[in-house]
Length: 204
Ligand SMILES: [Zn+2]
Image (cartoon, rainbow, N blue to C red; front, side, top):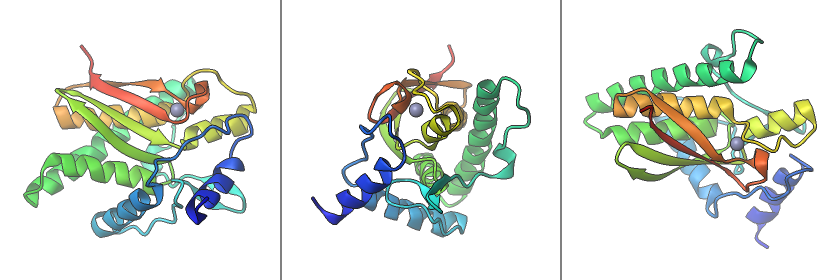
């Protein structure tokens, strides 16, 4: 086993006792290193995220979240997390697409930078999958929201739980395609999958 795998296994192993199946992309270290360079170059932020897509200190996992993203109410928390995520994703994508447009860069590059920024904030490792028309598939490895759920409830949810991430992706994609979108979490650590996967598409 390579040094990288031992490291990743140790981190993931200490994260959750009920889902030891968590998978990382094969080239996780390379993906995260490239994301960190992108985020430092364009967003002027040197992220402490590790090769598993997590920010850790004192054996705990942290998220670096803009204060705008923080839920404003405790009521109906999952819907609130989704809506906060949606607005955050939409605003961030709007800014980045405009900036990349000014630099003569395609808007897909702005979307990739947004995935890099989410990874560097410690949400997990985001990877862009297939784009088919106005539908995109995005994977998130080692989701911090699942980790958070397990720490709070100490019980496997048996359902998808990554609501804020879903909101961020739906909001960002809505800005990308110019229509309101939704994100369906079709795979989730919360229901025993090895990673989370979202299909993001316009609301018909
Ligand atoms: Zn999930």
